[in-house]
Length: 81
Image (cartoon, rainbow, N blue to C red; front, side):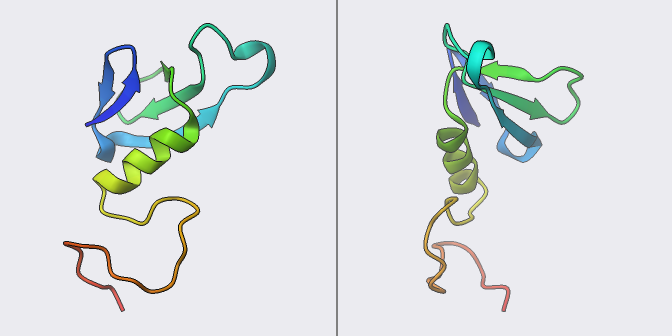
């Protein structure tokens, strides 16, 4: 489960897009639109796209976005190559 802020949570494996809000769309706790499989409309999250993406990567056992790709193994994951 990934926290979106304000008591909202989604399953990590159901998130398929994150869209950061900018300009007039952003404000009053509105930071990111989170698109979830099976839902017609996106959920408005109060957390940043980067924070949510990092939590998604952790939950799915992948390297965090922007992390170095030095070939280091991720704990609990079998290497693909």
